[in-house]
Image (cartoon, rainbow, N blue to C red; front, top):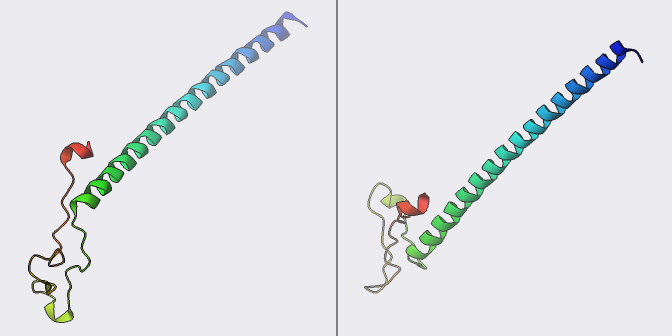
Length: 103
């Protein structure tokens, strides 16, 4: 091999090493992005699960929800007519979770 051929091979090897480095950096960058997205999704899922858990225990468990009829549309909901103090008289709105739970 002549000196010129050796220089060409060396230059090609240097270019290949640069490309391998760039590909490695891109792979690391994509892996980091994927890890961030996975962490965000896990955090969001955790907040959602906590929200559902809190709302499940903060909402009263009733057997007869507030009922609506066509005649009562636009007016107040009709209440179930059970004995006074029944837990089925009305369904209160579900409360929002505490702000600390969302962060």
